[in-house]
Image (cartoon, rainbow, N blue to C red):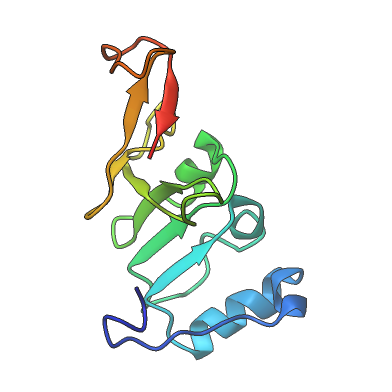
Length: 135
């Protein structure tokens, strides 16, 4: 999506992912506007750091807790929780998180994707009823 939209893709070296100061410095130096990373990596980044170019954070790859959303709730930065099983794609649903949410949903299907919750007979279940996610 980054390259298809004409943006520059910056991949952090592995050692930066394990060092919050290096990762934050890289984000500032490269003027990152949209950061996408697993919640465990984002949790290491200082949410109060001076990152004036940052306008969106997308977490995916593992469950995201409400504490991380609270830490990154900034008026100038959108926070999105993404979901996508490896068998399908890295990211196929997304939810824009609001400060103070008591849960962090996986969201709705993104453009050109469909997500269904079905029962054992492949019939859609009503909202709130458990089932299997089909993408």
